[in-house]
Amino acid sequence: MGNKTFILGNHGEFDEMVLKVLREMRKKYNDINVQVVITSFSQLLRRGGNSEKEELYKYEETIMFEVEDVHFKRRISTSNKFMIDKLDILICYVDGKRTRSGAKAALKYAVDKGVEIINLYYK
Image (cartoon, rainbow, N blue to C red; front, side, top):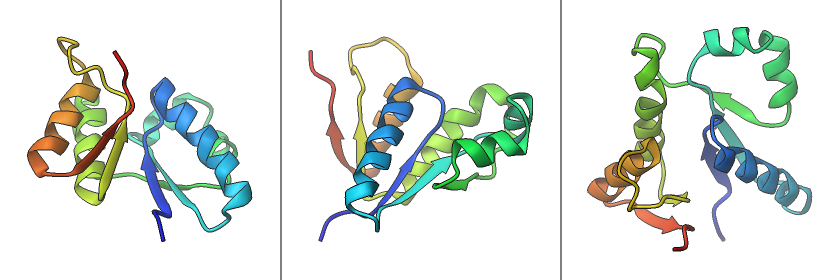
């Protein structure tokens, strides 16, 4: 059976790589659903308006959690928690030995929630 819906962010290199891989996979498995989380409409407007969003994510569903009123520095971490609350399996690339990072905080949140985790990070 397998997973058919993938939720990902749009801020980091890992997000970009995953989106590219999923787009390639969709050529073979056309029932894959990709949801890209947008953390701020105002951020999209600064990048070139709604038309750029439509072009960037033309074949993906975009979703936004209730974070527009959250301080801009906390929107990504808040969105990460909302994403983790929706998923069955977290696939990530996180160096757990880094002192601080948003990805590490999200990983800890997933561990605390008891989510199944596949961490692709190698030492």
